[in-house]
Image 1 (cartoon, helix red, strand yellow):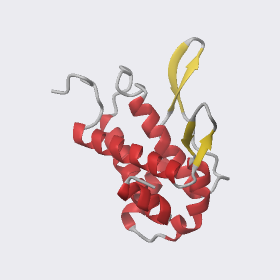
Image 2 (image 1 turned 180 degrees about the horizontal axis):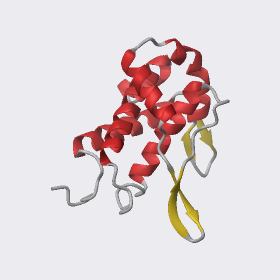
Image 3 (image 1 turned 180 degrees about the vertical axis):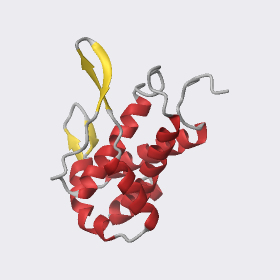
Image 4 (image 1 turned 90 degrees about the horizontal axis):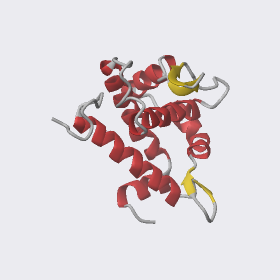
Length: 162
C-alpha cells in the first residue's frame, strides 16, 4: 500500500513515470533556451517551446499520438478553482485559437498540476480514477513525442547536461 499517497488515483508506477518524465522535460527545456524568469526564479517556457514545434507536431502520423491528442483536446481535465470560498472544479478547455501543440501541452501541464498539487489525491468528491489513468497515459505519449521534435531539448533530456 502506498502510505504517502493512499488516495493516489493512479497506479504508483504510472505516477512515478509521469512525474519523472515531466520533471526531466522541464529541466531539458530550461537547459535548451526555453526558460523564462530572472534572478529570483526560472521556469520552463512551455508556450514558446510548443509554438516552435507545432508544425512538426501536426505532421506526426502516429496513431497513438493521434488518439492521445484527441482524448486530451476533446476531454480535457477540469481545473480546480475557488468559487464562493469553496474549492471546486470547472471545465477549462484551452483556447482553440492556440497552436495545437500549445493546446495539448497546456493540458499536459494541467494534468501535472492536478496530480501533484493535491487536486486529485485529496479530492474526495472526485472518483473517476479510470479517466485519470487515461489522461496521464495520454500525457506521457504526448511528452515522448514532443521531446523528439527539438534536438537540443532531446539531448538535454537524454544526457541531462548542457
